[in-house]
Image (cartoon, rainbow, N blue to C red; front, side):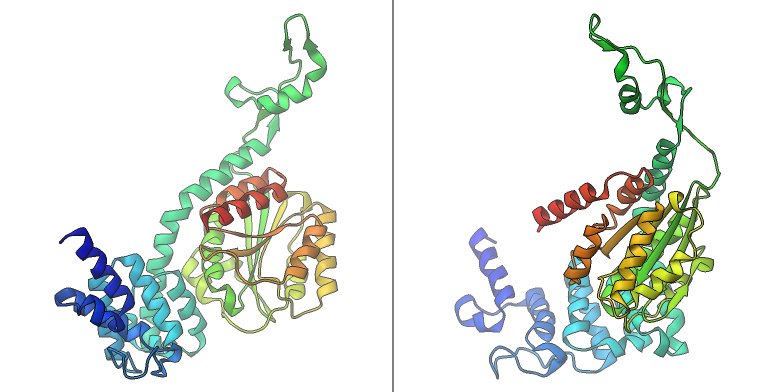
Length: 395
């Protein structure tokens, strides 16, 4: 096939049936791909049958039949790469209102597992029939296992390294010398004749073995818009809890607060302990988390929320100020996901920034670096600005 023919082929698949007259009708495998896309994208959201031009639809859509949807899911997995399959099935759930069909085992076994699907399943947790629950747990388990492979090693390495560097000793071995701090501490010993510093005091990185060095509290908003963030937060909390040098707590909230710390040995149990949807009371969640703080200077408090407060805003901000004033390292993430910056309450974000607590979105790949920076009490405002600039450049 010539480059021109390939270009026409791609345009025809992208434009659909209205382009038949100018670009021709697809055949063979292309026709099957075209039909799969038409079933989804040639219909308006919620499957009301109103496409761009009445009478020009190539397909009757997916309808409300679980077997038909399951066959369509099998088709797209055959014709498209995995990354495209995930986008299409997410679009199908949103555009055609297929959420309820995920309660059918036949459909659930046909989907390509991903973070968004897990979020949808968790939102259905309370209404999921027994015949579907075990299969749903298998789907969630497969996604969690993949996420742990992606993030666990980096998170453990970054946190362990940061803890080692945060522990200073003054009789270090040569390989453990922190040269930046050593030079700063010995500037008064500068020797102009030799154009060098003669250090009288060496500062190095210490290693405390398995002693608990930091307390980490993850406080996660489980309102419906935070689905992906809930999934990633649950996985990261379990990874952090596996480190003996950290004491990790996980608190999830909507208008009520649930402490899932006792389930952190199994991230699937953690995720099924959440209940996506409902309102938001950040103030109540922070009030509960404050009771977990026993060593303020050694505590990192991570709030994951879009900051749409349904509780008492002034009290919420006052509690954050109290945490900061006590020496707690406070981190506010508008999202912990690959989805980009979400809709969020700009006024509350600005109020937190005024308290010295920047609020920003963070990708899972960057979260280990963020935790390392928090452990070493680096300036998180600079970290937030750098992350924001990278996201803007990437978009």
